Amino acid sequence: MKRKRVPIYTGFERFWHWTQAILILFLAFTGFEIHGSYTFFGFEEAVRYHSVAAYLLLALIVFAIFWHFTTGEWQQYVPTLKNIRAQLDYYLFGIFRNAPHPTRKSVLSKLNPLQRITYFSLKVFLIPLAVVSGLLYMFYRYPTRYGIEAINIGSLKFIALAHTVGAFLLVAFVILHVYMTTTGETVFSNLRAMITGYEESEEPATLSSMEGQQA
Ligand code: HEM
Image (tube, rainbow, N blue to C red):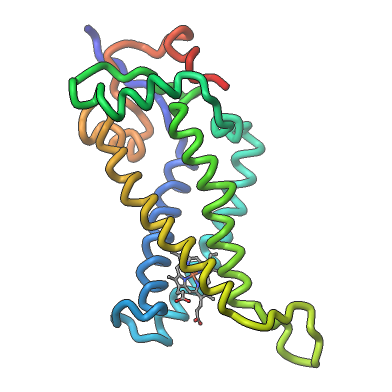
């Protein structure tokens, strides 16, 4: 069968994906130093780098939200139960028997039902948990001058706990995510698609093959 190059990811999407990945890994690395897990930069430098990376992540999130809504790409992340059984069966059993992928990627529908649920939860619960708790960590007494108490949270305990839980869950997500990227047509085909924007495919994505993935 003829191989075809199918466009999947736009330039902005790839830029956003890799920048977010680098920032989250760097935030985890500096964050766990602040947490006391090891010493690398030294506490004060780690705090400074963590804050700079946090502001960069916030700026990236603003651009990503704008992109999702202006392009309509947000619709790709609406969770669906359609085909979820087939997708679960594939990851639990089919994958070990060399079964074909139950869903096919296209630029109009690039996420399978399990990815939709996972990325939806990531965007709506997990990243906001890390970001909001991180901002509260920074500004739990704000402003600190003139005796104004716009934000004055008595104890950092719950904020620190929420932020650390968010950080552990994000690290768990990254580990699972990296494993899942190897489950494409070949071990590196998904990774290559996120770098080049194109996926190599045996046959063109037809409307019927995409049907199962639409919300
Ligand atoms: C916009 C996003 C974020 C902001 C504003 C933020 C902010 C902060 C602040 C202010 C601290 C405390 C620093 C200090 O003690 O002076 C902190 C600690 C920490 N951050 Fe973040 N952070 C963000 C994202 C992340 C991410 C994505 C991760 C990990 C994947 C992470 C992991 C950690 C960890 C593990 C700690 C130590 C928590 C503790 O032991 O209490 N942070 N962060």
